[in-house]
Image (cartoon, rainbow, N blue to C red; front, side, top):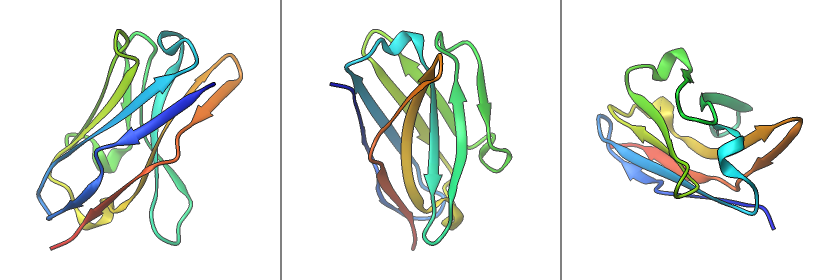
Length: 116
């Protein structure tokens, strides 16, 4: 059974940091390009970052470059998103996903709220 389970979300003040994790199971994690997307209240899904299957290549949404870092540990089947200098506009549900050869999987998401 395929599972992607996000954790690490919460309430943080502007300028603060959070580290999201996404634990994967039920598929060959190391084959999959992994991604983080987010959905702010009342808005559609927004791609945030992705990482190649080996971890050697990463891409970021312009507005998070320099503040967010995507990484993965293929030995632990886990994807991460380190978020720093958080802003109110980063408030959203963050979901992790993976895709490979036309197949994709998604988690349920974790809420990140940036507020003073």
